[in-house]
Image (cartoon, rainbow, N blue to C red; front, side, top):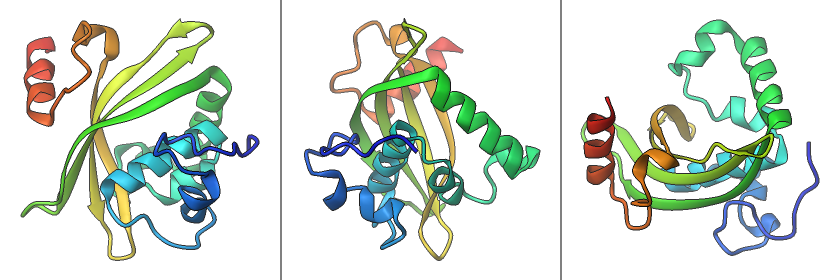
Length: 163
């Protein structure tokens, strides 16, 4: 794992040990989907593949290839990317379908190239905690500067227009 920063990488404005650290160390579960999403981003920053795998929903599509393939993919992602910031833009608590949604903007660089994106993530509670199920993303550049103040509904419209 990468060194633990003083300030939590999830940009909640708190120290790591009082923010995402307890989730990563299994001291407690993230209380809601936005907290889980933030903690997963922090895990990407830190290179914490065990946490990322543990917080995947069992129905996540990438798990069909197997845990070891997923672990190798994550480690390759850690090597290639530099994570520069996170902003949660909008969220919706679980509805009748049991799915919570979180819209976020992640600033990411790969070999000096901007790979930043906006994603609508879906989370489901598995009885023990919230787990990442799936996501839809658009490169930040495709949104042409319309990221600040973006809502889940506006993102859905942008996603449909991009398809």
